[in-house]
Image (cartoon, rainbow, N blue to C red; front, side, top):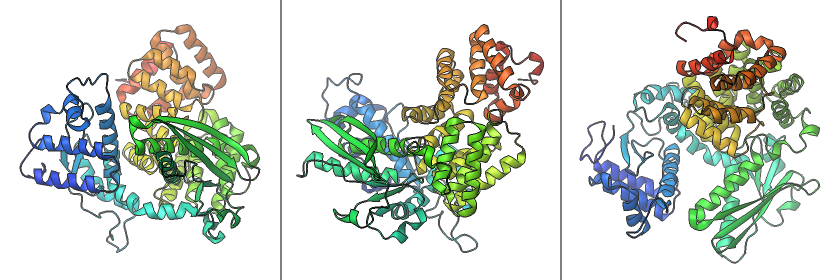
Length: 595
């Protein structure tokens, strides 16, 4: 329950003293990574709320007390409070995913205002995940999930299941952070044995970004961006990240890394420009380069460098991005595990039967050769799953056994590496198409927490949230993924079409649907058809019906099954079917009673 200034705890409401101690823990934690102004913001709104003055926490009040603005402050012209509040909300969420994952008192600042809310996390005890279980061994991730299920179901609705589960697994994430860094970030002069486990993955050497070497702000930022890029890159399981330790380290193991990430930082006044480029070490070819500009006065030094590092890391390592386009044609399909993963990305970009078969065969062989490789197992799961969810594009005849194999492979991939975002993504999709929405969203939340910069994870999780009826949050994630050039091309645009359609903006829905790749999957045309039917565009709808009847006739008798498989809520199904009926594809006689 929420607290607005109670004096004591009654089992549901934290006392003022408990809230003050929790505030101190947050502000003193190294995981709470905001500058002094944001800390003053949090301290001010918490203190004022405990004093019974939450109703006075408006943008004007905060601007004067925290930002030093005068009586002429205009929130419409100066968004400083709104921007800082958004940053503070994100950082509080990060804190409760990491250092505060098992803490009893939860402080949040709901959107739409600046007054904090205080909650008690019922039944959660410190160290619940990772302690010895009944058999004396540490609980595995799936076991730990089952431990917190009854607790998670008892908390307030606004702590949704995915987010709450994230806080439960946060301790696993925190404990594993050091191990992750040592596993994936190797010194450039490490012995070859240390790299043997990751020898078939490309390595990126992140070189120190150039800056004025005189202790100035630009020099400071260049070091910070380099460190932040490494932190962001290590979350991508498809690559190995290396950091040179000294100027002569290149002579020790010059053949191991195949890419170098280089860059520079320039500062003119408050305007910062960072230039980044990815160089193939074999021939020195620059295979990608970009400039990034920011105003450090607007966001602050730490947030600016973190944001730039996130943009650079995502551009380099995101699925279907530069790392997975370079040399794909010549490499994909060869024997090693990473080449098989390239084959998968190439297949998903082409979406042809032949490309699917090549990727599946390659991944099957790789899984036999490296059964301990979580990545390979996860991608193999996805190829089986695609036979189930794209049957009209891949000309497959999936059965329950197809989905069972995909799910078993996903579960194995997660057991091999519980923090692998791709494995958790595969488990999310397998559970979703197995009609287990709760488990699907739990896995999706964990995948997103593991690597929010993985555009495919963010996009797919957004799609599953949306189709489960959580359109606001789901569509936000899809939009963010598209903003980072998520692939494959035209895939997430159809998700945005559904988002607009379900909120009643049919004109925007049509634009998004036409921006999608209509030939990628016949279901994309079905989405456009429902939108056109709703708009009353009979002639254009007839063109889509003719295409489906000519190119994918087997879809027509299976329309209801495919739509229900994807849209969980009855009201969403009804809206979609009404559009198809208006378009002339779904006769009234085929409508189920009550639908």
